[in-house]
Image 1: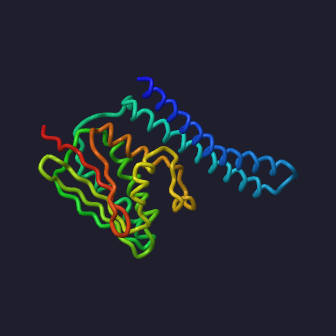
Image 2: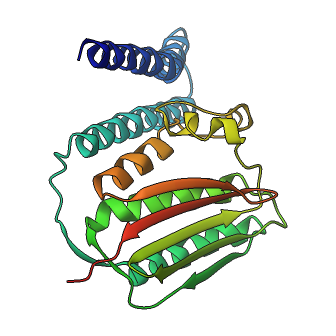
Length: 232
């Protein structure tokens, strides 16, 4: 028990340090911008530009806090959303079609191959958030000319969702690390994000009693989600 408490405290310290590090940058940027703007009188359009950029920084902070709250609620099993049978086939097709336009704008086709009549018991909002995060990552890290595939099928009593791409991928020795809050690979440093997307996916999958696996797609990545099929 003492070892477990020590592990939890260490984890809390690491998360706290990461939060401080990741929030310091937008807060400092926001304050410095406002301070510089107040040094001398400016044209109305300049004030408007500064206010617009300040709102963007504030939105970034709100998104981070909301993600942290949602992860905490999910991990504590205190999420207050509706829990019922989810038509997974319909949900995946809707999400796939929603992200197809974004993928194609990058010159990356998104292929949808979802079997009909797939269903799981869970929260539709959380499941949609998890799959959306994975699709967003696949699009973000796949270059023009690449390809993304969203497929789902039932094998015995297991519903399996695969999101595969041939982008930059994740080194096998980092599979566990990328699921930690705020962890970002060096290849992701130049892109927008707060390092919370995969942490939320992990929390959602755990809450649903499902499993998450990574696999090398040679090149790229396959993310596999496996749920016990709703048989009611």
